[in-house]
Amino acid sequence: MDGPLTGLVKKLESHVAAVGGKSPAGRKVGTFVHVRDTPADRLRDLARDEAIRWVSLCRMGPPEGYDVHPDAAVTVLVYNPERRNKQAVRANFALRPGRLDDATTDAIVAAVAEVLPPK
Image 1 (cartoon, rainbow, N blue to C red):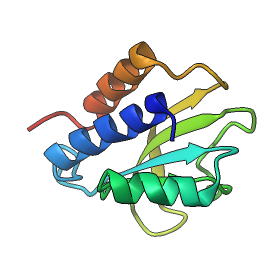
Image 2: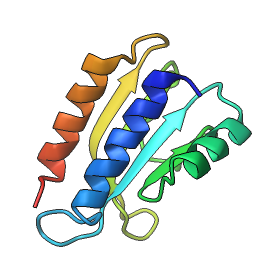
Image 3: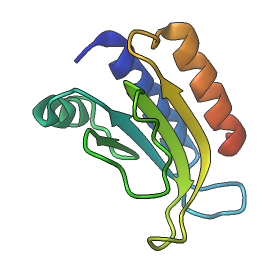
Image 4: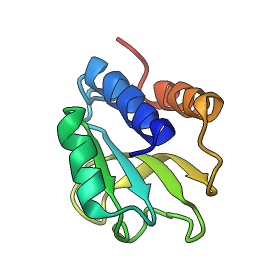
């Protein structure tokens, strides 16, 4: 798995774990990373090797209503995990191929921190 994607997932995992996966209002919140054109076994390896528990990794089409841009190489979504059709995306970051770097990762994690502020 490439370094920038692994770094992004690890930072998101760390932040979401630190807040216990809950919004300031105490509602459970989910974090979803959609990675286009990456084999499923590589995503499974990343999740296993880095002990990813709080961040969902996906390469197939996300559920309807998640607004994943079709041209994005990587999309990060933060949502409230209500029942299907009741979920609401709270933050959405779509990145073109080759646009994921340390500065972008830090900006995404900072924006996620506004949705899920540290305790």
